[in-house]
Image (cartoon, rainbow, N blue to C red):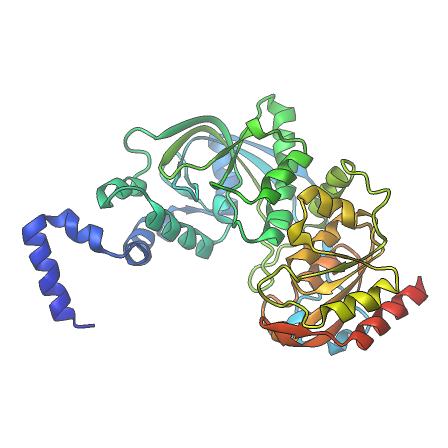
Length: 412
């Protein structure tokens, strides 16, 4: 890049059209990464978990709604065959207690609904309790903001001026639309706190979702007893909130910070399974990825034929409603499938045996242990086989898969 030419062009634009024209020409990602995020999101302005707890105790209200307990990822048979990035998570975890917060006079900015309290401090809880996620959301807000630089600069001082939208009570549930696993394990269990808030105060928060949420988000809310009039879509502008409701957020990123929450999974399973009729659901489920863009089985027909002979039903979660996914897994004794989000549905089962097909590209990938950790934290028995391939296709050893299945069926 010729910096001299860039400077000359910027100077000419400044003289001809004024300073706003130069600022508007800055690419949004540069504006966010090097101007917006570092300057307006400094460490001293971020309220982390402990800070949020103390702040809410002095300016808002706090309730404890869940006692903590131990969670654990314990070794399984032939665990020594698992790579190091799987075994490193084999330990005992302390869930810690779950708290519910009511925070007065907040502002939310952009469709990512980044939260600020009345003093202008940033609520990290609303960004999955993670600084990197906060910066990613800041980039989305700046890049997706409406209007020019002057309009978007309102986000830097959200408490100044009139808001675009006003709410009485809000619970923010803005989540990654392409991450079913995160929605189920991190966001849905917090609805236990929302129900506690309703019981304690008699107030019903508006559930704030991102614009155009995927159907599994709204369908899961409906199955958990929340009607469509109880949620709204986040605004690209600034929202004022009289009472912001927040709950303890536990990240489930095995590539970074992993905070398992089995008591939350169990509450979620009880609430959802009670609302479906699983009388005719299969006891053995093969989780197909043939609708996915990556990690499809290259020999899917052979796999399904062999497993069908053993009483398995092949299901494709990505093509099913949320309620149907819960129903299909509710009675499963054995769940088998290639590494992928569909395995999250093991949560709806009651003590099944999990058999995961781990592609080569996931053996050393930081996210590889995701479903191993989930299964063990739920107390499920777990087996695995490895398979050749990766994102472009997975070649499953049908004999090895059937041997793993047969061994488990013989034990039962």
